[in-house]
Structure formats: structure tokens, C-alpha cells
Length: 344
View 1 (cartoon, rainbow, N blue to C red):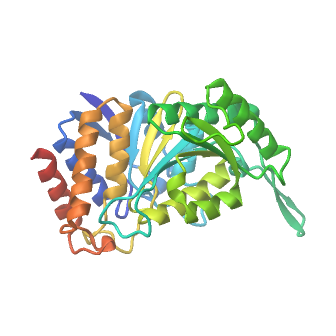
View 2: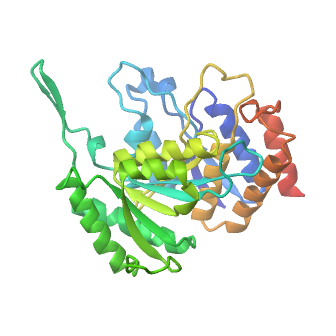
């Protein structure tokens, strides 16, 4: 039996979390969920949307999965997501992006992963007010953090059978900060046996290349099927991962993991959508796909494959889909169909 921290979230988080739990149970994996509450629901009592007992639970169990949580507006608190990444040193954000037959998209064969450095860059939050004239943010890129995230990306590429490792940067303009990231990308990819192609060499082996971030955005729209694993600093990863989600159906489809040396937190990255909470129409796919990532992380590959195959079949048939995917099914009906296919 596995003991895993469960943060249900709020808004539609409660509904999609319940659906995810049922689907995981149908896969046959024995999990004891340790449920802890975070977000606005505990803000008044604990003075924080992320009480210590949430962190204590994750540190004890090492693994957590969370539904979407509303960030308090105008109260001086960071999002729970950002706080978890910092407090647990979850340095790698991993977002696989794949097309599903049956989900409306202009593309057919996307299978790529965005790997985003999670701890520094402009998101380190080092800012200064310069009188009434300006605000200044400091972009922090370190050798250690860059080395760690590129090394993670190299291992991910090899473990998942990908071929192309792409470093994304803006070193043509930010020659010191992004220049450092690009130099480390070359050093670490070579250290892992992933070298650039020689001039005129066909891309029929594992190889590394780099793309300037604006060119990456354009080419991800034009030819996303040509990319495999892209690794990049924090800000670019935040933007491009959402761009890629839009290529395959939106944030309601895409899973996410935040992984560190000691802990891992899997999550749906879409919002808590309070306007539809309680109506039973939310799409639980993103959190269910995040649970697939979690199962693979703990070595339950067969169970993960069962759920993934059930999702493919549901989307391919197109008969039991939630309203955001063009169907009329409720959250529970969607989960029921997945459970039936998994058990069959």
C-alpha cells in the first residue's frame, strides 16, 4: 500500500479530485490517501493558505497530488503552487503534451514534454521599487540550477524514448543570464552523451539543439510534431507550456508534475473555476492524467497504462465527454465510463 498526500483544492477541485480517486482505485493500485486542506478555506483559521500541516504531510509521505486551489486576491499571499515549489525545492516542472484522437485540435501527432526550471529566473521574486519612476525585477539564473534541470531533462529524454533535446533561451539578447543557461545546456547534454548533430548529419540518433524562445513559440505552432523534450528557464516554461496545452485541447487536458530531489507533487494546472463548481460538469482529465504520471513515478506502470488506454478509448468513441469537449456527460458519468473500461 502507498500513502500519498491528497490536497483536494476548492471550486471544481473537489469534484475532479473525487473522480480521480475513483479512477485510480479502479486501476487496482492500493493507496491510502492522507487528505489535507489548503487554500482560502483555511486562510482565516491559520493565517495562511498553506498551513504547516500540509507541508508536514508531504514531507512525511514524499508524494502528493492536488486539485486546483483558488489564490486569495489582494491579500499578499503567493499561490499555493508557488509556495509548495519553493518550500519543497521542487525544481523541475514537467508537462507532457500529447494529442488524443477525438479531441478537437489542428494537429494529429504531437508528443512532446516541456521541462521548466522551477525555482529561479524572474520568478525568484527579487523586485525593487525605484521611487514612482519604475519597478525593477532581477532575473536570476545560476549554474547549479541550470545544471540540475538540464541533467533532469537528459534523463527524462532517455527514460521516455525521445530523440531530440532542445534548450530554449534568449541568449542573443540576455548574453549573461541566458548565455549561462545555454553554456550549461551544452556542457550537461554532452556529459550525458547527447551531442549536437554535425553539419549535414541526419537526425536519426539522440541529439541536442537550441532555439531562441520567440522562434520556439512560432515553430511550436507551425510544426509541434518535430519537438520532443524542451528544457528552459522558469518564465519561458510557464508561457510555452500553456501555449502547448492550447495546441491539444487546453489546460483541462494537460497533466503536470513538480519534482525535486526528495518530493514530488502532481497537479492539475487549470483554475478552480468557481463559476461552475457544484454543477458536476467539470472535466477531470487533467488531474487523471496527473495521476497517471504519479503512478509511473511510483513504478505502477501497468495501472498507469490501463488508465491511459481507457482515456484514449473514451476520447476516440466521443460518446461520454464533458461539455468542454463537446459532449453532455457529467463529471461522474465521465469517471464511471473510465472505471468501466479499466475494469473490463
